Length: 164
Image 1: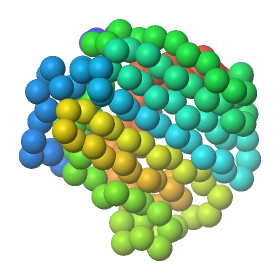
Image 2 (image 1 turned 135 degrees about the vertical axis):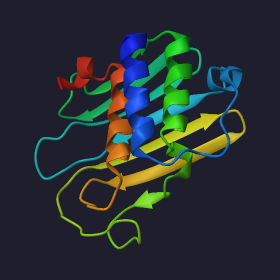
Image 3 (image 1 turned 135 degrees about the horizontal axis):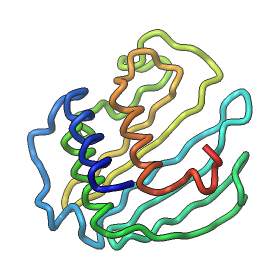
Image 4 (image 1 turned 90 degrees about the horizontal axis):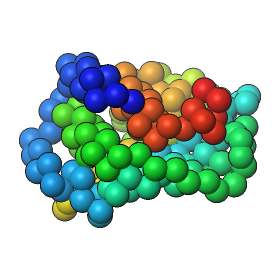
């Protein structure tokens, strides 16, 4: 994703969600200890099931489970600056202020529809760490969360494995 596109998406995400009180320093956002992960679970159908992680040094680890090519492990790289910009964009969009879970029967879920996939994301940067579990059947989950999940996929380049 180009820097211009990432900046535009970041600005759009910032308008969709609450802003976290503490913004990490740019050095923390791109340090080797930085890790962003996304794991997509199954649905009633052919949703891709996989896990991807982006390290602060730009390493992308992908593990395909179902409805992806390849099934198994693969790696690639992105520029470390892309990972830093991703963490900054997620922070600006309010990732660290989200509820920990948007799951059936949780207060943040709202009306629930079955058979939708689940997505678990996590961000570790500097001294901050956050994991969000999101069942996409939860109608009250913020739209910005889905946009953040897509942003992680975009920066990681998961389309090369998922075909989506």
